[in-house]
Image (cartoon, rainbow, N blue to C red; front, side, top):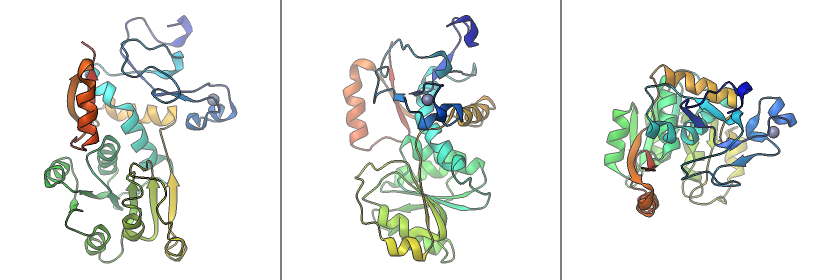
Length: 271
Ligand SMILES: [Zn+2]
């Protein structure tokens, strides 16, 4: 690292996953996710699944001593995305009811953790009773098994007919209609992914009649990263790690991901 980077040789750091230029108007405004020259590891640039990584010094964030390498690897994308959707757009208010569609993935679990810290009542859904039980252990207040229950009907029952103030949906086409119907009057729907497809019917009547607000969000700013790392340093946030595979068994890790068996992050280890 350069002498003026603030980093020292041998220091333990994690990589902020979006390389930003630091010079464009968005970067100068502190909105690194909008950087005109952004380059995300695994999308526009290499650096994932690698032993060494070369990035600008401003992309490296010091980590606390008690955060393991596996935890540090599992933290950024899920928790940064979760942070911005919970606090960075329309911050949640303690006591609000949040519905998280599809618990088990890294972003959904990180969102559950942060929403609980913020004082929300959190309802989660899954098709797996085992995942729902584990989500309860992590603080979920209510669970819905969407394999045998209708999400929006259960949410209405759980909220005295009102619906949820906040709905977090990164599943997309398969659940969008449920999300719209589960949101209460003036409810906020956070879209941070569209795993099952990006073209569901929009149901515009419902959006304007119920005066819903729809927020798109992805990754986070360096300031949001700093805020997240403060909670990590306090020991109040740790990523949930599903399993660890050595790099030469990466295909097995992808197979597990594709079967949606994971609960938390799958980490690849380079021995
Ligand atoms: Zn920039």
